[in-house]
Image (tube, rainbow, N blue to C red; front, side, top):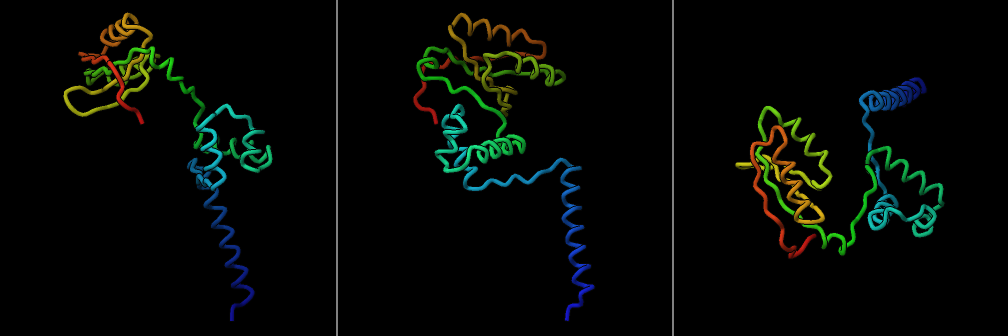
Length: 175
């Protein structure tokens, strides 16, 4: 037979354990990201159109406006939603000139070079790669002249030893 004293001490231990876990999560800045089915639906709607009003989201999800607003805030605070971005129209993208730029960096200036590359707005993606070159940048500009200026800017950065560029002529498909 379980005594009342052992039941009470078990309950206290359970509460202490929960409090300890909570305090550790705060101290280590760790949070469990729990996403339920409604959150997944909300994220799907925001992915389609991040400018959808909270009222429209609430109507679509059959939830109250305040519930949707609170879920969005929690998803932002937990890091699930990092930010909102612009999705360019195909007509605008079709007018851009794009290039893949292979970049060989000086090993002693990698951090500085990466910071400088990040400051160039025409570089839309930057990847670390294996092989002879260290990075591959995806560059987009409004004309060949502007693309040439960006390529010169990249090549003149301190820490860039050499580059090799390929202008993208056409896109067969994109997923």
